[in-house]
Image (cartoon, rainbow, N blue to C red):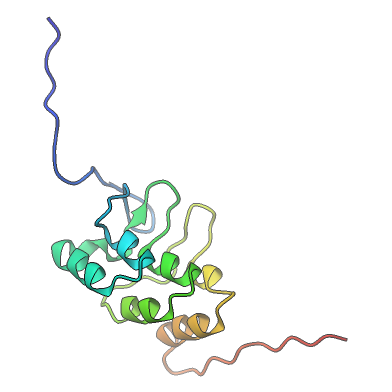
Length: 130
């Protein structure tokens, strides 16, 4: 007779990465809420687990900030940047940070830059065609 194993319930197991906390995707986690532009969901997730702010999905390494930046969700980016402890330089599994993902959205790049360098003014580089 084979020994029975107990099935664990609750949140999925987490393991540490070099940049933050890796986690499996759950419908109620902070990353999913950020991608849905759900401000209340983000705040609930942080109230439940304050360390989830910089957590990364296990299958691609994105964070809530990377996800919001890549989708052009400027108000969500500002909301996440207002949270103490937000990390801007965490990279996904492809080595891209929130700055990289925000490149198509100059306003978001400016927000990220202003958060990183509050004493400096961001000026988008000009593109000159010859």
